[in-house]
Length: 263
Image (tube, rainbow, N blue to C red; front, side):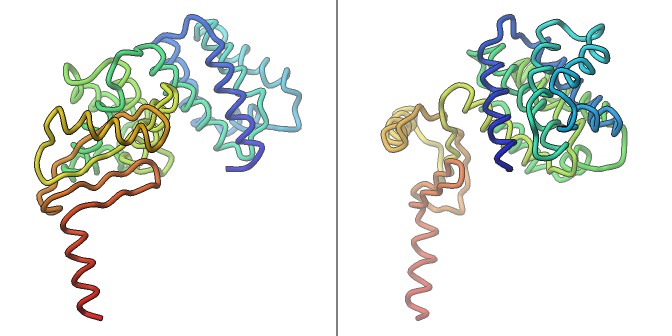
């Protein structure tokens, strides 16, 4: 990520945090705008043109989206396009990021990270589903409708909106990668980290709470746990937070021992 994009991302997040009236309608508007901009090279170039004045780029937003998006949505979209982005693709991603964060704000009590994690696991375990959602062929809106049907009654409205929107504009990103990216954004917006915990058998509620407390103390932030059962770890735990992996599984210890014995 370029330095210009890093600064722009921080400014955009600050604009969202300062906004009022952010609801799921706003999040949906922003996702729709990202698809519209991504589908029009002319519009994308105009909004990402760093040679144009920020006010001029904001006027394009008003002219194109003012009659179809809510005032809150137009204001947030204008805040995004007025920033300086390193690449045009970064602008579209920034709009999507703002949409994901808006969805998290709209339903603060919803277990969005957990919903997205469970759906990511479902995709990972079903090759046909992953192929259907990740294929470059087929109607993009149909992919969104498929996700909506699959999550109906099983996930919060904010989680469903995020997942169904992202699959409609993957831009050569794998579905699971998109879902993991969204999980991190939601956690960041809520001021916590997300840990994926792999164990051979289900953890008790007491074990989950002890692990949560230990990780919170280690990382200095609240931690949301997503647990996964994998008998191949044999025992112990494997924990991943972002790029940090804590592997205390028996399978890894045995593999290390075999390597040492092999010389």
